[in-house]
Image (cartoon, rainbow, N blue to C red):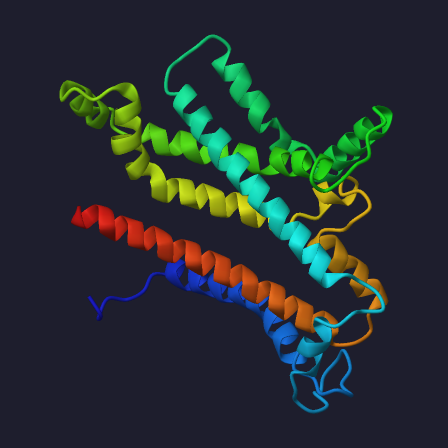
Length: 272
């Protein structure tokens, strides 16, 4: 009821949430505003004019930094990690639905990388490649380093999904004459597709902005987070803020598009 008095816990939570939002979106707002500096603007307030000059400058050849190349590498790496994470997590979720010898040890081994400092994993993979005489690269050593971060999350999510999944749907399909493969394709997969999309989005975003596990495994060419970090020490114009605005907007587009797809699939399944 509207006339009910709010509890003390409500106001504590409201204050905490307000502080959280300010810490989350405050810096983003500052970067967004400063990215619209005029051609003679600097890196701090107040704005010296308003223009799109630095967004145009961002896509020109820079004296330092390779925004276009680093973005393409991060995007390709994110897609590779996303696909692998979805496939492996799905297979792991299916496999662990039945008990087998060594399941507990395998589970803890698969999620152990979550408690190991990221920089240690990056250093270990980099040293291993060097000892084997292999050249570290974003598509090999970097790819493996990112999977040590995304796969445990994907596996844990799929475990939660299948723990809530009722086997009665599969039993009903088999009673109607469906094979195991047909049951998976026509019954199980459509029901867990929104969850798989979520796992894919999670894997892509974790890879797209990963810094520590990429630092010593990317090889000669930087990914976007490494490129941005390098530009913070060399670039002294608002083009850096324009880069932050563009990459943040891209992230929101990916998240929004994925959430829209999940909503569409859920509505379609409800109508069906």
